[in-house]
Length: 174
Ligand SMILES: CC(C)(COP(=O)(O)OP(=O)(O)OC[C@H]1O[C@@H](n2cnc3c(N)ncnc32)[C@H](O)[C@@H]1OP(=O)(O)O)[C@@H](O)C(=O)NCCC(=O)NCCS
Image (cartoon, rainbow, N blue to C red):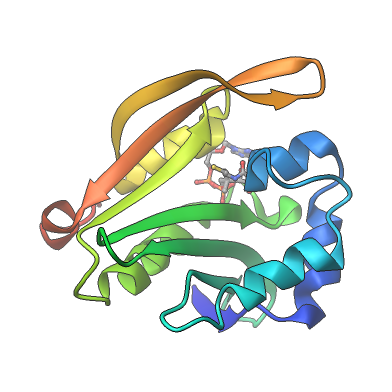
């Protein structure tokens, strides 16, 4: 899985992967709204242009250069924490085990910065495909923020998972 910088030419592709409010919040959290606009996506790129960057965003391409996914790191430089987010695999390419190499490459990028000692992520408790993936990669489940997101008439629980630098250095599960 190779990464290329997230750019405006990718906006229509991301938009085509997010067909409902549910999809948008599942992917990007309750602060994003549906339909996802160019302004919302542009802000992610602008956050990558600060010094140091607040956010790093990539499209993932497979060996045939097909756009296969997306991932971001929200960087808390002061505390040495990178929050992995906005993880998605192209809907037609799901179920082929692409999420694991996508996350492995994201972790590699996060820990390439010596300041970063911890990676973490938020995932809705019902999102078993994502939680299975994060467990397979070796993330630790830390706890649940109950009833923390409002989506339409529903309230969702948010699970918090993490991986420390020492755990990453010990190697990801095979
Ligand atoms: C979560 C996600 C990234 C996993 O990507 P993936 O490449 O499909 O992952 P995998 O192929 O490793 O499959 C993971 C699990 O998805 C489930 N799955 C299998 N086939 C699937 C399919 N066709 N469609 C959806 N899910 C499928 C399986 O339960 C699988 O777990 P298992 O292999 O232990 O049985 C992907 O489902 C996705 O993009 N979801 C929408 C966005 C999202 O929820 N992002 C996470 C935000 S925290």
